[in-house]
Image (cartoon, rainbow, N blue to C red; front, side, top):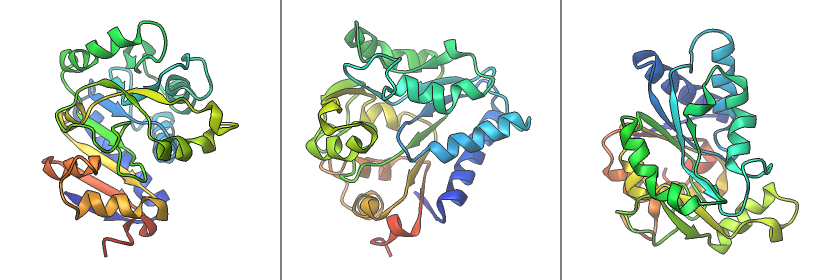
Length: 240
């Protein structure tokens, strides 16, 4: 596991370059994408690189980590809406090649096919992750089995509280989600994780130096052969 510490601007730029380099080496690369506030600057940097002609997404396929159960893709807090608004609408990507888990309709059937879809696409070449304050990655909460594939899960109260900042009221936050499992994530060839802020310090310590345990889902990444953790000084503060 490699660790890079720097400002949010620096680490976001470095992650964007990781993605650009993967696509330059493999124009039809398969990208694993995340939502939330952590990757926003990364996506802004990728949009700028696309506008400048430094990278093209026209042959790329993407798979997102998760989605809230109960939210239509047109809902402003759905992850499909987030991806369109913060990345897909601004780059030369074919939206038919962008895959986000469903939160409504026959979402369970789609969920069960998701890992097979990723495999049929050739597997994820690079996956970006954020990290929850309790060490969850995607919506794999503490206690999630390490061998889990894409599944439906209840959200912990801590995750609901953490995500409520994006809603008008905590009562609006969905209580369930569909998510890639920990094994699904570990199948990616390369993983980059971004963590910023003091509230992530305990999780980052568990990720880098803690015991590998299902109580700290991110700790499984210690077993992956190609992981780079990008964090700011606050998130890294307990590791020193």
